[in-house]
Amino acid sequence: MTQKRQRGFTLVEIAIVLVIIGLLLGGILKGQEMITQAKIKNVINDFNGLSAALYSYQDRYRALPGDDLNAATRWATQMAISGDGNGVFAGTYNNILAGAPVAANETNLFWWHLRLAGFVPGPTAAGAAAGQQANNAVGGIVGVATGTAAAPALGFLTNVMCTSNLPDKIAVAVDTQMDDGLNNTGQLRGLLQVKPNDDLRALAQPGDLYVENGTNQYLVCKQL
Image: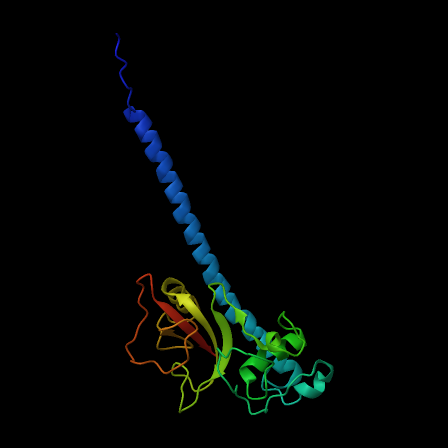
């Protein structure tokens, strides 16, 4: 009886397989990098676009959205609520509504007023949805707040715009492209989060810098 001998792969065949695997891995890594770059650009566009919407509203109505003293009169049919007109945002950037925003929720009224004015898309009917923050490209939220001496917003004592849950690589890239690349100086600052959509607070240490370890997430805020 003739014994059949099993034919193995030749070196050429193995080389071809390795080349194909390399091309597939390269394509996957390149695709991941393109996705990351798209998210970075999206976050930057959020900052620039929302800042433009805020300044356009201010130019049109001579008031800050959310803080607008005449919003209730202007949009009476939509049952809009006015702010107190003091130039700052009452409330927190990450306030989640259970019902329609009230006068104390100026950080939520901010979104309602912008939507009523047509500067950003979203629901305008009185209710929680009208005042909810927009989401960013990484599943966090975008919002506004005001830093005070008693509760500085990442060291800012002014109005700020914040975006949350940014992976370390994205946070560093956004700060580098828009500011100085440092999380504790400049017009853009970052805070290492301890939980999703973390609360604003003063930076714990002046030397607290961005760290890229693949797991850190940052809350990044821009001075307005």
